[in-house]
Image (cartoon, rainbow, N blue to C red; front, side, top):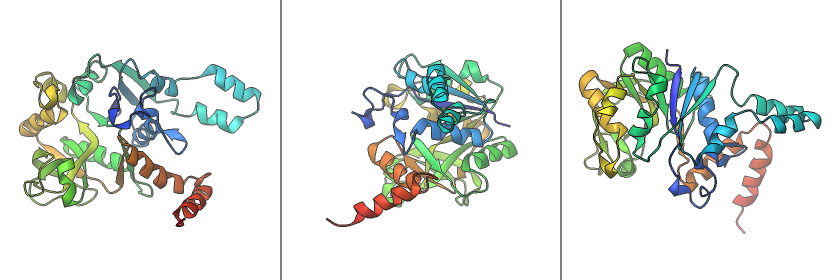
Length: 296
């Protein structure tokens, strides 16, 4: 069973400037918590117990968020604010480990994942979760991430989570080429390849890779041998394509939906979706939505 996950959080977040100038983009809030906490919660619900943050010297706020804050906890306890105190103490369960490693240079997503090699090891499978993307699978009996990890366990093949996108937007994504028919939601299918941001006419499908991966430890050796590609960076997709050619890789089609929090409109859309159903703030938030939806 996959118990480890890599979260690459070393990027500078230029699409979120100026909000990300002084704080990591992963710490921008959606409703009442930073986006990184939603992603960690997603991993924990799927059974992950070791979370490796591949970080940067400017991202200390992320590590601090998951660390104990003794002074703050003592203050809350002294003031009798027990509910807030319990929230702080349970940001992650006691049996979950948050581990940080540094990416010394911005050499690409593939390089960021490779930085986790000493922690993960070459013999253990792991997940990769990109913190730019929130996966909203509210109401599903089994989360999309848990479903993808189960598919890896069943097949032993690498898995890429994919989402159906409108055909007119395929040129914004990495698009997969399934072998035969596209998989049904909640199922996986072998891939014959991937195409980065194809035109509509050249796109082999409208299934886009959304930033969730289940990979064998063998990917590290492939990453170590992957030369710089687009942008002179080590691309994870290049190593995954080499893995596909050698051992096969599947596309796992998600059932929920995603929010791209790597850009401001994505944060706003996520705030709308999560805010409406928040157990404490939802009713008031829906009233605000109704008020501001009225024409002036």
